[in-house]
Every structure is written in structure tokens, then in C-alpha cells.
Image (cartoon, rainbow, N blue to C red):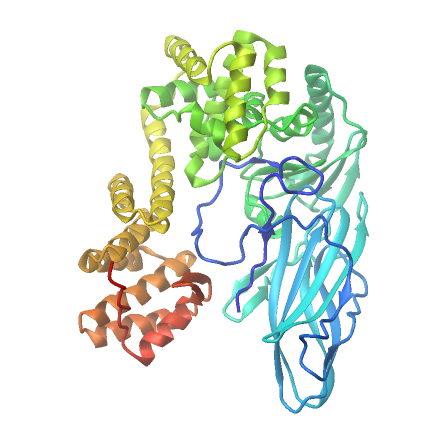
Length: 578
């Protein structure tokens, strides 16, 4: 069973907003993207869906009926729903029940979804109860249920529940995850939020947290920043904005479905505020206020937000001014071309090299404001649009040149020349080199992975080899280099890389380890070493790793692949003649 517990809409399709949200995202934990786990996936917008209750009588099997669900009280966190079934047929019926929750009027774009297998015994009526999760947010919550079998859809129901701010009461904040048996619930249950209101904000925070201890300082600080930003940007917010404070990024991810230290969507801000990490209080408030001006490319949006920070805290590892970081990156020839940054729709993914992109965007934003003034920058912020469409991106470049009287390339050249002539406190060379390597290796892995999946195997092997040469301890680099060798039929080199992954990995990297065992077994089967292959298959089976991946046109898991390998030796499929 594939449990897809968090989903997100593509940027630009979220309800009520031109973009899904701004993220303070450079402390992202790297993860293995191609495998389907409890993670983010892309869905079309669900804004137009309506509350429904329907059963497809044309396709449903005779004698099968599911009655409307009895929801009872619906709250944030873990909930349960009960359904009654009737199977008048002479055989048992297997169904799949999908449960999905999301806020129809939220700009977050986050959807929680789970799939349960059901078996309805013959000639019986009964009931079953399933659990689902509602993430903390406000607006119109929609819960959707859908049951399907091989004949098609048997049952569909959706029901809406209003969540107004501030939301108070008892609820079970218990995160879910993909375990050996499918959807499982963590042993830890978070307490209900405490709620505090000020003139401009509603604050949610956990009892006993750093946020609670500092609330008397947080309230006047955030109010002061908000007033200053509204004055500087010449805009005015109506109504109260909402803050959710979480003690760490992992807790925020588990309860919101979003992986970042800070996140702004609509009128809601999510921030990490804990003993190990407190992001600059201005960053997300800049996003909140500046959105009243426009939704420009992240080069300008994240540049403006980061430029308002006191110092740039590079993923919590070293604090310095954005100017110091940019001068250091310029010396290392590590700055990203601004034409590339202008086309990004978000920072945070490995391909964007966020620990370089954030300070670079801020430094260039400062240059534009200092050299050309706020009014021109405000105009650019209002007229340029954050959009992946190449036609829109081309128009952005034309608009930029019309506003500033020179192309982005020319402005970049002028900025770098000025940057090279300035001086600052400086950064230790060892720190800068470390950041560059730590950003470059995941970037190369992401590039190589994209090349590999698009059919450019030779180029992928070259890029991934470069990543391994830069950092020989990076497990993902070895894993994807192994796949590049494997696809290119260099089986000896592939087996060597898979063995490195197996030796290097730990319990946090079971996906890579399990698949490395499976693919090592397949290579050994092809070379006639059946006993060695069986050892790898059995080790993969013992890991019980159930994350799904698409192979040869179908979804499968390393567990299924391992059991097939145990049942019979692997034989490589014959390729059709060219």
C-alpha cells in the first residue's frame, strides 16, 4: 500500500493567491526525491470541487453499498470516521478507500491524503473506522472519501467544516508516517496550542516552548516590525495575521506538511522558534506585507525579505552580512547567474543552491535599491511575475530592462564590479569553501538525477562523478552514480557503487540501502552468482522498506522486488533492436 500523506499544489494554483507561499527554505534537509513516501506530490487545483455524496451505480458491483460516513466532531490533528458497508454478493470484495483533507480557501496548497485497503466479506453488513489527519490552519476544511474497486468507483463523499481564527479546544496533534504496515501514528502527541492575540496578530505556540517564554518580547517586536514595513512599503494590512510557532523544522514538517524554517501563505506565517533555531523575525513579515505590492520572481521576493535581516544566518551555521557572503562567493566563483535565479519559482530545492541563492538575491536587491531607488524597485516588484512559463519569464526580462534602462545581464555585470571593489569584515575561507561544497554536491546530484531520468545517461554519469569527486562521503551521489553506471551497462562499476551505499548508509537511508541490495542482486544474477544475489535480496526483504518507485511503467517497492528476486533469478529484459 502506498501512503501519500502530504501533497502540495503547484505554485500558482493555490486557492486565493497568485503563488503558493514564500519560504525561508535554505535549511532544508535533503531527501530522496524519486521515491513515493509520506511526502509532497503535485496535484491540480481542487478549488473548484464541491461537496458531494455519490455512488456510481453503473460501474459498482451488484450488492455492494457503503452508507454515508458519520464524521462526528472534526478537529485539528488525528480524527476518525466510521462507515457502514453492505455486501449482498457471494464473494468477498476488495476495495481501496482514499481519504483526503485540505482547506479549500487556504493559500497553502497542502493536501493530506491516505489510502486504505478494504476487504468486504460476502453476504455480510458491518462497519469500519479509519483515521485521518487535519493540519492546523483556518478556513473551510474539506474531507473527501472515495472507495474504488476494479470495476470503478463505488462511493464518494465530501463534507466541509469551518475553522475560524482563533481556533481553541481539545485536539490530538499526532503526526502520521509511512511504516512497515502502511500508515502509522507517532507515539508522541503534541499538546493543543496556546493562543495569544495582539493588535495585529493571532499567535499559536506550544505550552512550555521558547515562544511561550518569550511572548512578552515577541508581541511588541513583531508589531513594531509590521508597522515599519507598512510605512516603508506604503501598504496597509487589514485584519489580523496568524503566526504558528514550532520548536523545530521537523515538528513543523510533521504537522504542516511543509519543509522549511519559515513559510508565509495568505495571511498565515509558520516559523521555527526553538532553542536551536530562531529565524530572523523580519523575513516572513516582509513576505506578508510585500505581497500587497506583488508576487515577483523569487530573485526579488526572497532578495527583499533576506535583505531586511540583521545578518544572514546561513542555515544556522555562520552569521554574517549578505555583502560579506556575496564577496566571498564572488572570490570562489560560486555566484549563480542572475538569469538562472530570475527563472526560479522558489528557493530551497537542491537545484537552486539555497545557501548561495538567498544571500546573492539579497545582495543584488540591495544594489538595485541603493543604485536606482525604492520606487523603481517597487515598480519591478509589482510588474514582474513569479511564473514557470517561459513566455512570462521572457516578459520579465523585458520589463526589467524597461524599468532600469539596462538588461539583467548588464545590471549583473555592474553589480559584480561594484561588489569586487567593496570591503567588509570578511569570512573565513574554510567556512566559505565548506558552504560551496555543501551546496554544489546536492546541486550536481539533482542535475545528474534529472539527466538520468530524461535519457542523458552519459552526461549524468559525468556530473555525478564530479559530485562524488567533490564529496566522497555523500551517499546520494554514490547512489545515483551507481544508477548511471547501471543504465549504461557498466555493471562492475555499478555494483561497486551500490556496495559503497550499503556500507555508508544508516537507518535514515533505508530506501537507498534497500534498492542498492535489490539492484546488486540483479547484477549478480546476470553474472551467474546466484547465492550472492540471494544474500542481497534477503537483506533487502528484511529491511521491509515499502516506499514506492516507478520502474518499467509500474509502481513497485524494494520489498516486492526483493521477493521476486528470491523467487527466481533476475533476467534482464531484451531491448528491441534500434
